[in-house]
View 1: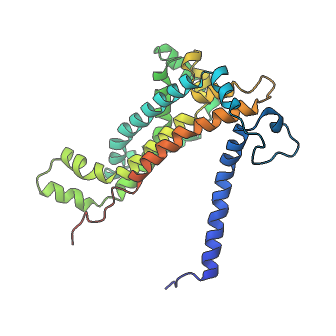
View 2: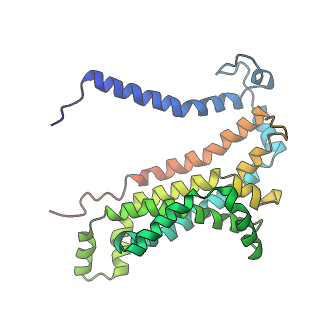
View 3: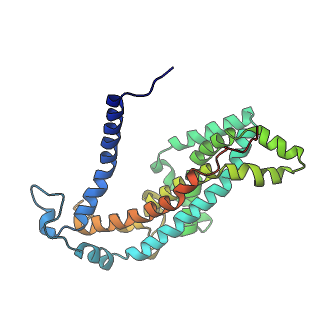
Amino acid sequence: MFGRPSRTGRALQYLALAGYLIFLGFPLVWLLSTAFKPPRELVQLHPSLIPSNPTVQNFVQAFTEQDLGRAALNSLQVSLASAVLTVLVAMPASYALARFRSKLGTAALGWVLLSQLFPFVLLIIPIFLILRQVGLANTHAGLVLIYVVWALPFALWMLQGFVRNIPRELEEAASVDGASRLQVLRRVVFPLLAPGLVATALFSFISAWNEFFFALVLVKTPELATLPVALARFVGIEGTARLGPLAAGSLLATLPSLIFFAFMQRRLSSGSLAGAVKG
């Protein structure tokens, strides 16, 4: 059928991969460089990648002028709660959509995906009014609720694909052995869904961690502000940004996402069906 790629083809593949990695990594490298540059180097006409006189003053200013520690803790609490609740809700719902297929389920999934097309600006006023009526405006609980609802459509669409890849024979075999429906779900389906659950948790966490618009509009108390809102305060009214402290704060803001991903990425390769069906 298809032979092994030639050396030229393999070299082109590695070259394309290297170019893609540079494309993804260069903004982070430039952010790292900017975070350690003194003010004079930030306004140079021909900026250099490596700072001539590196300094940590930008990090000091970022933490002293804005309470980034509290904002980071707020973002961490909101993001973790959103990820956990999204997984708990999407897990049984995606199983129902994948296993009990019907016209109603297909229509529901279509509507769920269609809801993602509505712009934020169109929804923010009714969302704010509803949260104010139920006493959740200007609270982290209301913010978590919005993030869960907003992440659920993609989580359902993604997880139901993972469920369909699990052979029905495994569930039938467990049922024949006397396992109840709940035991089948707990001992067979959910362990095999581990990669999908991890991917859903990562998506929900990063979406909530980086979200700015809802956090800006729905939370007004400065002590409850999340990290993206706190970082936005380094930009003046006329759009003039204080690049040094902003880069330092943005660099620190990327670390929790990278740590969370590094901690969870090993689970992405677990839950394999290899060995699940004995020959």
